[in-house]
Image: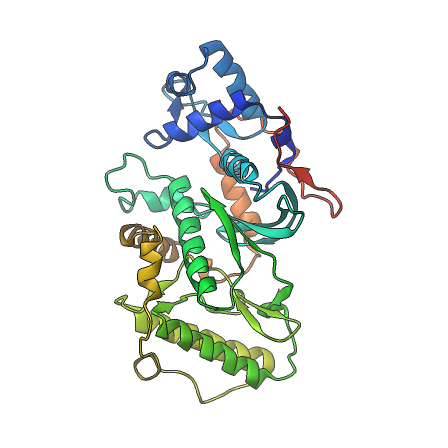
Length: 372
């Protein structure tokens, strides 16, 4: 699902009232009845149907053709617009530029705030990998009636923002967090390249040592990244590493902490041997080198991301890793397959989908401000 924010400027307050009503109804309904949408939006029934039709043409909601009742469900695009609307009200995001990255469960865009400075917008898209198959295996939402990809994506964004904020405040080399809403996180744009794109470094031994020290330092502060690899490490012109991507991070008190720690260490060792022909027999050991000095995991919980939410998200991530082992492959070659899965899921919907979802050109920028 590619983000196309061009239509955002033309949407009225009524459009957003109806779209918000679909989101609200989605908490208890996989397909939200039109009658419920009308009640929540507090608009005339005839007007609501017109707005729903317009939203469907923009692929922000999807009408289900084979449902037992007349109803709609929220799409990725609709959730994107709701988040962008909120972020634009806060002046965190006022324009959207090019897509600069895509992963199995996230999309990355360059955006600008009200001050004109460029930032990064990360849209968490948990559920892209066959969430329908996963949700039937475990009651992720417990007392909630319907498992929701929107809720899981929101949890993932909440976690990333919470961890990034705590790490940044304590001097770790991470992007500066700016804002978040729903499944979106806005952060500082770093002028650096992913380690996986770098074929040669001046001193691989120095970079190797710095990365191992960073793994140890995290553990001494009570945290393990759990996905510490060449895809989630940026290297700037000064050769210093910057760490990104935190949805899988766990506390050192986790039952599998040692396993996760050793996996992070091994990922760096294997990569440096393969890419730079550098191998060191010196590497950190969990029991020996990770004496806990601080408890940033406790601070994260105090920030609002609770242990219950952490366990819920962790269970989900473990489940999709089991069902979709390629999620840890971190390659982009299966992206077309992901898009095919999404199109198949929408095949029975009367969404009025158009062909406007093309990648922005390098000089194009879509305004997020509502002109109405």
